[in-house]
Amino acid sequence: MAEPRETPEPDRPELGDLDPEAFRLHGHRVIDWIADYLEGLEDRPVREPTEPGETAAKVPDRPPADPEPMEAILDDLDRVVVPGMTHWAHPRFLAWFASSGSAPGVFAEALSAAFNVNGMTWLAAPAANELEEVAVDWLRQMVGLPEVFWGIVNEGASLNSVLGLAAAREAAGVEVRERGLAGREDLPRLVVYASEHAHSSIDKAAITLGFGTEGLRKIPVDDAFRMIPDALEEAIAEDKSAGRIPVCAVGTVGTTSTTSIDPIEEIAPICEREGIWLHVDAAYGGAAAVVPERRDVLAGCEQADSVIVNPHKWLFVPIDLSVLFTRRPGVLRHAFSLVPEYLRDARGETVENRMDYGITLGRRFRALKLWFVIRAFGAAGLADRVRDHLDLAGELAGWIDAHPRFERLAPTPLSVVCFRAVPPELEGDRAALNDYNERLLEAIDADGEFFLTHTRIEGRFAIRVAVNGLRTRAPHVREAWRAIRETERGIAG
Image (cartoon, rainbow, N blue to C red; front, side):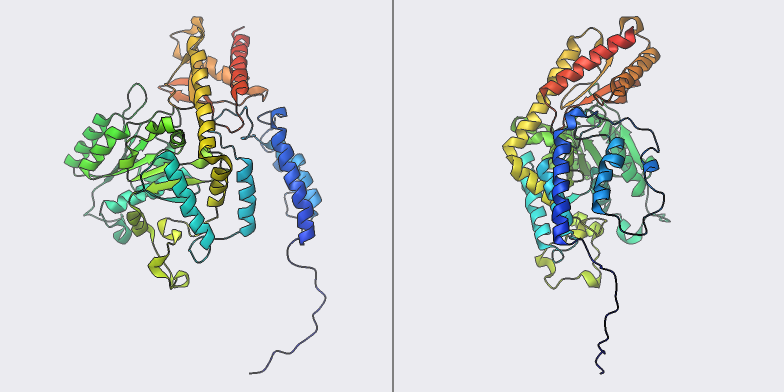
């Protein structure tokens, strides 16, 4: 075989990455920028005043043909990005469920990007896979789930609910993996049950997995917005008598609107008797169980088949990181495992390949930031921060209850307070009260000092304050209550 001839290299431009010295130079600037950003958050509005299209108008509509200097790119953080940001890490961000990434998590995110591994198999990233096992098991211990639970990290609760419901469908024994759903005269409708206050991701999971919206039954709730177990039992009996197949019940620990906690201890025995999968969405509320005296929030979850906890919601891990725990990982694996030849490993069953437990083949090294955050704060430190948020929300609820012009619209079992203003002249007029509170929320948010959001509870417009940001402390909650009262006096005239 002829050897390739050596020919002179033609002149060609420098290719490859930034050289190490340039990386150090710009990297130091990035770290300084992040430190200044986090240090100066309180001096900024929570939401920068911006209009739709404003950010896009600041950048060209065509990509640059030639390289641009990193100095110019970093300069554009302040010119282009920051003016169009809502600052989720801000201590006065009290909207939705804050996802306030901590400094240790920021470090880990950068390091994960540097490693840039794909942890699809053990061989592809041994450390990433094994540290995920460790960090997830630490979380399991911190929230008090028994050792039988195995866990896996994914991007968010929406995907994890798809996986949980897919495992439920697999456990039902209807051979969907092999035979699908379409065109099967032997397969009646499959049914999933969830409360009227379950997260919309459950609806999307039902759509994605072929249950359809007609295969998702919404179970009524009590006056604390918790699923009524008797109503669940009745719905299951009704479906069975009609020839339908009950597959899964979804309980929620910390619903999005009101943070209600379904009575999992009562739901679990029903699922056990009926032989259906119990999936628990504790994406937000599960974090409260890191506080030893609040382990009650997960009462009954030891009997669940799958449980979701999101460290990126209330445990200060940068978005995105959600953990799906299951007592039956073999079922989940059977639902999804598919190993092409190019991913086979001679080690076989002696190693665990996490690609086998879900849809995605690509798996970022997300667990590094969970590992960093737990180590940096410690289990006790994380519990102290969550406990403080629970206490602050309880104080705010008490102030609202004591004020004659405000009322709470839901219990406050965790760290979210739902309320509205009730000026005496509007009492009894739902439409007028809704309009008044909508205007009140718009006025509170208008100057950017605070950012609150809303929900509707039984048709009533409710202002919603979520106290779960890492940097949110007692003075911020007191100032929020002052701003709410002063703004309400202003619009009352």
